[in-house]
Image (cartoon, rainbow, N blue to C red; front, side, top):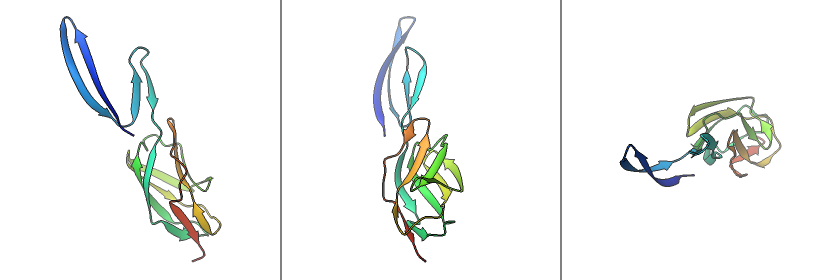
Length: 122
């Protein structure tokens, strides 16, 4: 999610127009409170893994900074790591055969449900 903004800032009689794209945060200038946008998941690779779990998957998207949990079909990954705001890895938990939603949870919420990973009896 990107927010395009134009802010006019004035100080001591001098004004400046600032244009920016804010990909992750919303800032309430009146209160100084920062609101985090939910993460967005665009891809998972590999997209298939064994029902025994243990598949290392790489997630791509945005807003991963500060991730509290990554789940596959609602079950927490045994380990996960956020490499950059747009990339994370997760070791999948065991699961039943079929498609599974991969969800990244941050202070800003969670990405939308999806069918980005498939458990297979390999």
